[in-house]
Image (cartoon, rainbow, N blue to C red):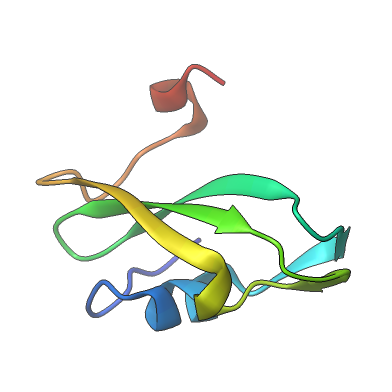
Length: 78
């Protein structure tokens, strides 16, 4: 992602995440890290259908990394 959400919300996060390159299967899970200007919010995604779309209703906030506006895969041990 190249720009931050204006404010943290599942709707704004879904808009920033966009769609996957391929379809998720129903029940698939992923964690997304989405930045704001000052924090990074971790969202749990649980697919509710067989499509590539990430919608607000499929996201649940897991944690806010306060004061951390940017992260990398290495920060998550990946």
